[in-house]
Image (cartoon, rainbow, N blue to C red):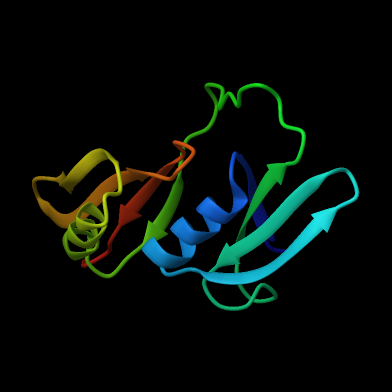
Amino acid sequence: MKIRHTMIRVADLQQSVDFYTQQLNMDLMRTREEARRERVAYVGYGDEDSNHALEIVEMMDPPAEYVHGNTYGHVALLVENVQEMSDRLKSAGVEFAHEPHQTRPDNPNMIAFIKDPDGYEIELTERRV
């Protein structure tokens, strides 16, 4: 067994696909339109059969307002260099929830938290040691 995908609802599917593919360099794995009036895209790194996907779903008849609730944490991405990635994202206008910082004073690894177009937090993390 393996985790196949994680799903989030978004207000604008194309805006989210652009964010994840252009800003976070994910691949668009596939798209589909559901009979229950949803537009769906799967994004991630590599092919969907071998890698975990992020399923992003736009409802065609959405409620007046999306509410994230208080149980969502974040999606974490392992990146080669958090500071370099953060600098690139800042220059593209991506919003940061937490600026790049060391996880602990005795550990050189950095983390940062950004927000996607719908306000979902994404952790950028690295493992140097």
